Amino acid sequence: NQSAVDTEVTRLQTVQNNTAYARARADAYPTVADFMEAYTEKEIGSSSTKWDAYVTAFNKVRSDNPKP
Image: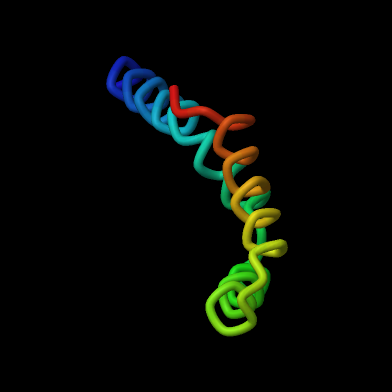
């Protein structure tokens, strides 16, 4: 019946809205390649410059796209 359809549409829209932050984060996070390069340079090369930049970028994505 239409009432059940409307209820399900509302439920699905709520799920979509409540997970929008996760989709936005996924698109904005630095790449895995960026992570590997920054981590390797920090661990092997003893330079944390790229690691610090990676952490800053990662945290900015989280603060710009907070969980509801």
